[in-house]
Length: 422
Image (tube, rainbow, N blue to C red):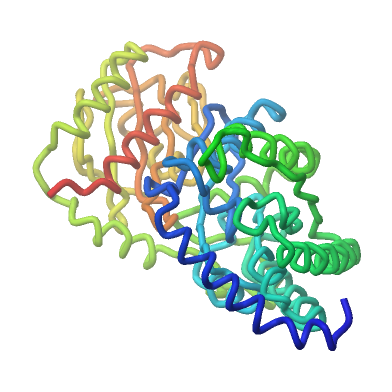
C-alpha cells in the first residue's frame, strides 16, 4: 500500500474501526479467571497476551477460548502439563503493547505468545512504526524473561474472516495486514529467540456468533504444532533452567548473566513475604475450604498426614494440618523448603535413605516421616508462597505416586487463595 493512500485513508479507517468496536460491547467474551491448565507433570507455563484471538470473543470462558484450547493441544503433544495465563487487551496496538507488558513477570514463562496487529492493520499503522515498535517489544520481552523463554508472534488473522470487517474497507485492512505479517516474519527470522506463526482464516459457521469454541481449537492446534519442538528442547537440554524458572524463595541465580544479577526480574524473600502477608491468612484459624482439599489429598494418597504450609520468612506455618506434624517449624533444612524450590512435584520415597533428609529431626524423631510428596503453591502474582504435601511413616515406591493428582490438588488450593471469600 502506498504511503499516500495509507495517509489519506487512515483517518477513515480509524473512525470505521471505532464504530465497529462499539458494536462489540455486547459481544460475549470470557470474564472468568484468566488462567487455564491441562493436567500433567513438569508443566510448561505460557503467557498469552493481546487482542483479537487472545480476547476470546464469542465464548464465555477462557477454557473454551484460545487459552484452554492451547493448553490441551500442547499437553496432547508434549505429554506434560500446561498452564496458560492470558492477558486479554481488546484495544491493544503495537504502540501500547510495550507498556502493557511491563510488570507481568515474564521470567515465569517458558513461552510468551503475542497476539497484536488486528487494530494496527485496520487502523493502517505505518510499517516503519510497526517494525520499530515490534523490535523494541521483542527486546523488552527478551530482557524481562528467562534466558530460555521462547517468543511466538502471531500473524494478523485474515481481516475479512472477521465478520465485522468483511467489507470493502475490510479489504484495505486485509492488504495492510499482509504487509505487517511480512514485516513480522522478517523481524522474527532474524532473531534466535522469536518465531512468527501464521494465523489461518476461520469463520464461524454458527449464525449470529462471532467465534465458537471450534474456531479456537483450529488456532490452538496450529500454534501448538509450532511451539512443541521448542518446549521439548528446553525440557530435554536444560533441566536446570526449567527448575530455575519455576521460582525459588531465594531468587533466581543463573537466569541472568553476571551483570544482570539481582535485577528487578528476580523474585526475592522480600517479595514473597509481601505476597504471603497480603493474603491475610497467616496465623488465622483453620478454614473448611482448605481443610477439605488437604483431607482429599490425605485420603487420595492413603497417608497418615497432609498439610498446606505457608513460607513465612524463616519459618513454616501450616494453614491446614491433618496429622501428627507440628504446625509451626523452621524453614532452614526442612523438606518443605526443598519442595517450594522444586520445579514440580517433589517426591521422597524413603526419607531415611535420602542424604538430604535422613538426619532431619522429623525423620529421626516424631512424626518419623519416611514418605513425602509435595507440590508448590503460588500467589496470584507468581511468587512461591507454600506447599501442599502428604507424608507418612511408611516408605513407598516413587512409581506409585500420582504426581498429576498432587498438582491438581495444589491448583485447587491456589484457586481458593485467589477466591478470597467475603
